[in-house]
Image (cartoon, rainbow, N blue to C red):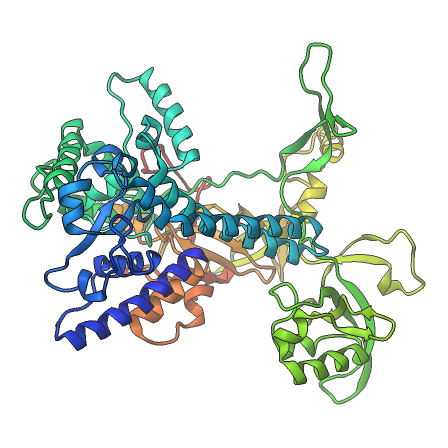
Length: 636
């Protein structure tokens, strides 16, 4: 969300720069560097941090700018090319005075700190907002409002950290080795211990920063794109080919640039390609590599918890932590929202009145994603009297203002409306989880109602009929049913009876007319499959690129038997897929793009597929093939 806000801001800045170029008679599109300069200019409120001089838009945009981007902590010391380490600075000051110094080494350091005091106040104010969201998440009445507060907290934390890191670079008295070797605390710790471990196996091990890897990619003509999982492979190849000598050459270039202000267009660092056709070879790697997705099956694993008494962890005589085990499994068995049930008289399709059980949920009366954001949301409120009070208030003040203030059920007695029951049209056949403690006389009110959070497996049954045509059927097992099966008490009983894994959870066969369909295979989320067109045997005659186009991962199993598949190299989520499509074709993205296409394209693979069992012409990982440790397909 934070990144999307930044992208929208960049588009706005790009439009402003374009307008300036047109007024100045400059015929070119705004570059990424132009947009970055504009953003830094706005962050600094149009003033140079180092000199206090006012900056006009023409001073940093155009053919001969007098202000340019400088690195707060010199890159030769930090290898830090992040935006947090950049400001818009007067060229003369950068070349003649700052050069390879850090801000605390400058004579006018106290003046500089005075000019960025607003950054300190900014991140301190945001930190207060973070704490407010922490309190909101702890006191939230519903899961949705809790989730919203947590999401808001994380987004604010990202913004706070940006401004704090930007400010603290100006207060550093020295550049510690930790600053150079790690770009973030978590990655720094991982890198530190990974290096120590690898040093026990190899003689020469050194770490590099992500920003430096990006510089090498650019120098070697490689563009990073996150739409394909192969970008991880390209990064790995780039790192493997970054010799220490190349790394030091780049550091020397940064140092010379800061000392003598060598323009990049005039002199490039001496970083030669690992071999002559390196760029072309690496770009072609997409057609030579298969992406294997490891998805561990955690649901059958019995969970364990630390034994606590009054919040204190209990230990045994040897001082070891005592763990409890019981009838628990790992994973979410159902969604957390509980639904109520009510009976209402409705008019059916035939125009006849009938009583029907409808499901409702209690929501906080507030303007938010977890509350209400539109009139259509308000119209779902069950209580007609309450609904009319709210609608009247919205007509007077608008929905945002109306729901940001107390809504009174009885203003004279100061009785506010805090929560309301709403119809949930999408919930029609929930799971009846368990009985209430106090049983109602009405049967439909006796249970806790929840919705399914996913299916654990789909069993596929297959056989050929008398005409040689493939017939298939399926059996779905949701997480709740699988959780009941994998309970420790149930497993102990099954083992005593000599029942094998999954026996009793799914049948060995299914009847389809006069045909008995035996169990063919069991599919779970994360299972890799290879589609065949005419015959399963054709797979073993394909080259690596042919298999690449047919290799998919199962991502979802629907109760109607359809399965969603994702292309093994596809790295985008549904939102990114939709956005990229609309930008490329300047038209609304079809639903099939994010839901999944209904057929396989063997030459130009679709990002996602949504197929019914009749189209399951595929080899399944673990049954027909496996992917070995070096990414090769092996026949089983």
